[in-house]
Amino acid sequence: MRCKTVYWLALFMCFFAISCDNTEDGSYVNPITIYEKVNGNWGLTNLKMVDEVAKANKIEPSEENLSTYFNYEDFKINLSVDENNKPTSYQVTGNVPPLFAPKGYWQLSSDFQQTSGTATRIYLYSDAQKTQKTDELRLISVPGKNEEMQLQLVRSSGGTPFVSYIFKLTAIN
Image 1 (cartoon, helix red, strand yellow):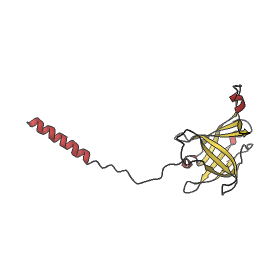
Image 2 (cartoon, one colour; image 1 turned 135 degrees about the vertical axis):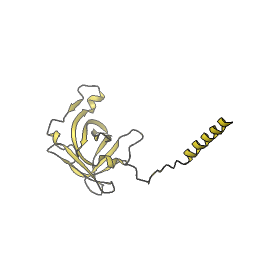
Image 3 (tube, rainbow, N blue to C red; image 1 turned 120 degrees about the vertical axis):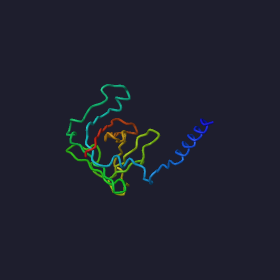
Image 4 (tube, one colour; image 1 turned 90 degrees about the horizontal axis):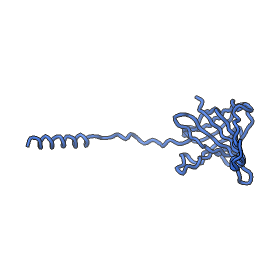
């Protein structure tokens, strides 16, 4: 009889202890957007040119490392946002041949990563109203803890890609 009483008392205390657990969830905060991850200063660590026609036809070599040619080791890009993490302007610095407009305004195709696995697009504009699109980059690697990202610029003719450039960038603090 004493064992049953101890058993029930222990069970009651367990339920009592569990029922007293009030988990504080904190207050609401906005979800982290890609804008928060990509804004700031980025320096080039690698630039690769891919011959898309050669790659499609399995012709080697189809890739060329351009990092050390044409001063690309000096390539830096700044992606600016306002106080609400909305995109404003961008600027490329360094004495490098421009592969896209060296300054202007930018916007993402989506504030969040795509669940479909498709790359988020970075649209580049010449005007602050974002009506005159000058180019488009693909965000193929979103920065995370390692503070690295990859952008891809694709050049096409008649809707068929013939060359792409893959920029591997790291955050500059």
